[in-house]
Length: 261
Picture 1 (cartoon, rainbow, N blue to C red):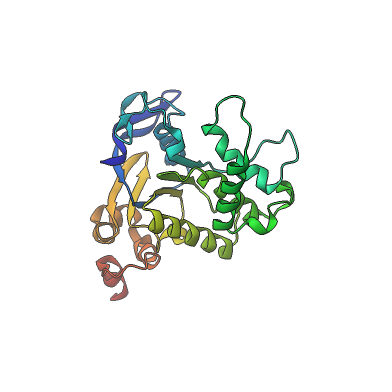
Picture 2: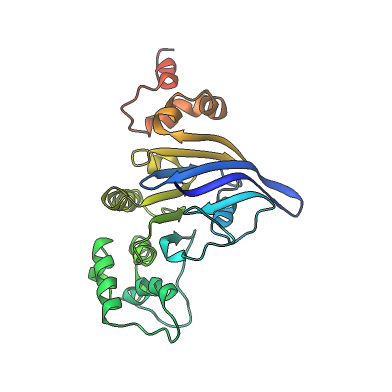
């Protein structure tokens, strides 16, 4: 069973078509990269998958259930693009990470000792426990992203969706972030869907690719991606550079043919 099942999905803003006939699936344990240029519809697609927007045509299923009936949102950890904590009060890093538990609580929403234990555990896993008592607003960009990742992961979701998680991070922080996500993916069979416009960030970690540019250009595993004529037709002369970032053991014929010229 696919954790995400999207079929014939279309969407338009003010009459302008943003997505057209999109179909794909994500299985348990997959690490999928969703790539496309700015304006290609990546974030819109994720909002449709999460029920934040309503599709005009097509269907979305989560864990085998239609999006209109799906209620178990604690199974999904979502780190939105440029995510920020509430600004109403000065929150510590610990406070921000612990906020991820609110969705599972009934009124009155009061944190207990077990919540605190879980927060310490996930902050240790995401390597931000050392600064848990510091104000979130005073942390560096890389430190803030680790705390927000802890908030995303605290319910131990079966599916993690990250929208441009490495924006504004330096190269070292980006690599550390994706190494951490990769460890979680491999260690717990958690499905990961990462939205990015730069394959250099995720090429060596993912095993599946979705290439989106309002329409679905490609959907498949790394070996298919490496050998797909649809990919090389779309990226053209940029294809060899693209393949350099895959760190794949499979031979890439487009890269080889370029090198022989």
